[in-house]
Length: 353
Image (cartoon, rainbow, N blue to C red; front, side):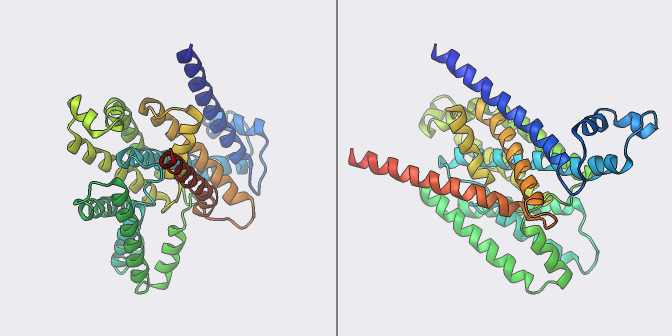
């Protein structure tokens, strides 16, 4: 009976997330300075080829707004939001701590630092840094900042202490970035400042395709690791007893989470609190921490979360557009505070008992 009830819950959660994804898609496309009727949106989405060939009539401005501006922005927010949430879930599994995430642990800050170094160093020779260089720099920064946290915390067996060291590495990377910006050109300072606040506004179909080519295979790889993740989540002793190479598996977790967070930082800048808040929301909805459920749920919920935050960022104070990082912080930070307070009450209750 319990299994049937759980199956119904899981199905209902995924159906709701899918419905929210479609609702966010249509609502976001229809929102902005130019209002487009829902019927026209579906007609343009479903008959793009016929409209481009001239076989079907459509408003040219509406067609361009949907296909060249709003849709690539929405899809990039969905892909990167899912990637950021999944990265947070992997790090929370690694540290066995629900407040672990790429922003807190310095992965995003390391990527930001390396991108600042590359941008400032190459700005004297080229007007724009190639995308491949940007993605590579973000990945290297993510890996090195996480490696620094692991090396500095190598002598401690406490995951909480390792988490604190990761936070300190994050502050160091941010301080180095701020120091470097003092020596950058004015134009580079403006670009780095705007980028560091997080935004999907410069999205293009090229960005969507490249980010999808990085994120979706990584998502598939993480999903194939559902069984080892379940074993690891039960403790290193249990994982070793079922034949899992824990040291190698931990390296795999770090690499996968760094790839995902680096991709987000390279294309949209550092976006905070999504990787912490969304996996926790999924655990509450599913009432389960099983990786085989959490992996797709975290990705889909992260996509919906970032699409909704991007909608808020560009419409609430229109025509002024907020950075998406501001909105995710405003929503995610209270969730993290509530989570930490809940854990403190549980620990207090346990110690009193």
